[in-house]
Length: 121
Image 1 (cartoon, rainbow, N blue to C red):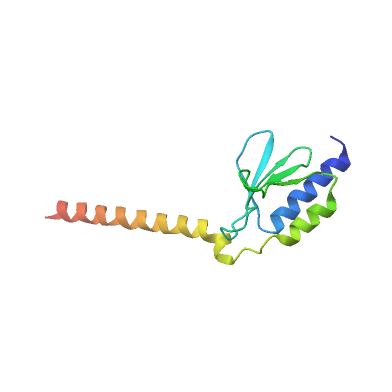
Image 2 (tube, rainbow, N blue to C red):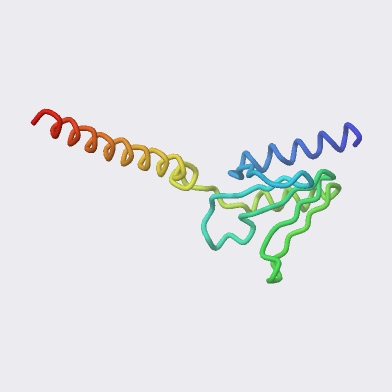
């Protein structure tokens, strides 16, 4: 891959991350990006291939998105159409993680205290 093409792909990844997309684990052939936007946003999931092609949308509907690496105007228009995620949408996975750990720690604390109380009798 040429340096210009690599730079174009890296710029696109950077631009998508800046508007709220997160990189998800995926195959070696493509990069999976997910946006924590509203459920009605039709391009919440994208696949970016190593040649810079971006594919997204619901394939079963007419909302399929295909932006080639050379089509900078279409990519810029797509970036402008992406809704800005709220703070809650950006951080809800961290919130759920903290809640789960808090419940787990509280559960095991109660178990240990009950066990200790049973031993002390």
